[in-house]
Image (tube, rainbow, N blue to C red):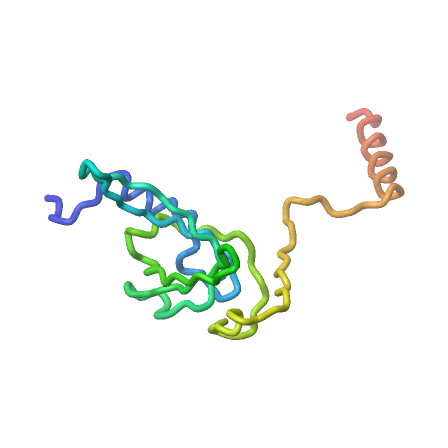
Length: 153
């Protein structure tokens, strides 16, 4: 017997395949927050669209609790705009990481009037090949040729 609170397949897919970083948000991250907005037009029809808010995370409060919030700040046309997003709300479609900057404080409210550029945290690229000189390449090629040239008995 199924319980009263069953999830449909699309909800299960969303939960399993989350590509957002809700639980790993940290101050200094530059993120894109996809927010669902419902609007009514003149006829009274309700439309839903997704609005993207890209900015720097200043603070994350209440960790992974259901009421957790993240304060995101961006500068729009020379004016600073801050929004507080409830992280686990269905209004927030997803949160995408753009870049991660180095910040030493838990709450980065000093960024409101900070004029210097922040340093980006560089992560090592796993996909790239290790740099090998020409001598090493030739030595490997010679060994491969020797192994291929030897007949098997």
